Image 1 (tube, helix red, strand yellow):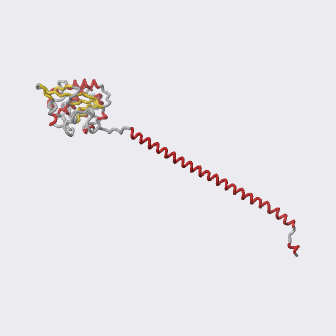
Image 2 (cartoon, rainbow, N blue to C red):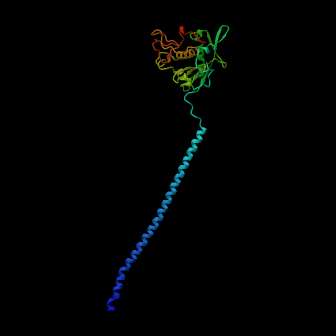
Image 3 (tube, rainbow, N blue to C red):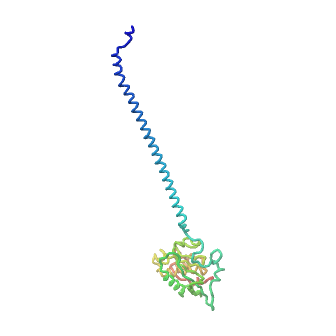
Length: 283
């Protein structure tokens, strides 16, 4: 009975031959996938570390760039001059003394400026330039003197204008238009003006070209425009600080204190000289 229970040895060998290859395959596959997982894990860890290093370098680079920008801005903020304001608020660098405490025109201060010697009234003026101008300054000085000494002009009030190098009562200034925009509350970058600091300020562009409604329209030549703008602004300084808005008679000759640079209103012709009824002064 024990002999029947035992399997033949030949059957055992057949079974071993069948099972053994599968065991080897299983062990080999396990080893293969185990090694594959191991090396992939190492590679992944290396990638993660490399990525982390790259990100850290990027952050450091960004921080360095930001620091460089901050340093650049700080340096330039310390070395660059602040942008100039569009218009100065006080007197110009070449201004005279204020005509009163708040820099506005008033009859009480006009009376004190003209000098009377042996019955003759004198106004001492100085000609200056302010900023970058294109007009020839010596030509400007010569033409201003011609206007102020012309017997058709303010000399008819009995005042003689004398150019001096110092001790002046009045500054007559040829100015870069950029300085005039809003200057002292009286001026415009488009036109000439008189400020409250004993300044007659002639706009360089207007001096050279006139305006569209005057020389541009062929209704005044440039020399008459120069006479007109000089007499108009000096007229303000003499006490005519209000503009005349229109001619007393339609089609009449424009008064010198009409703002002719911007148009004739109801007047019929331009005029570079003070009219008879304008020959008064508070000085």
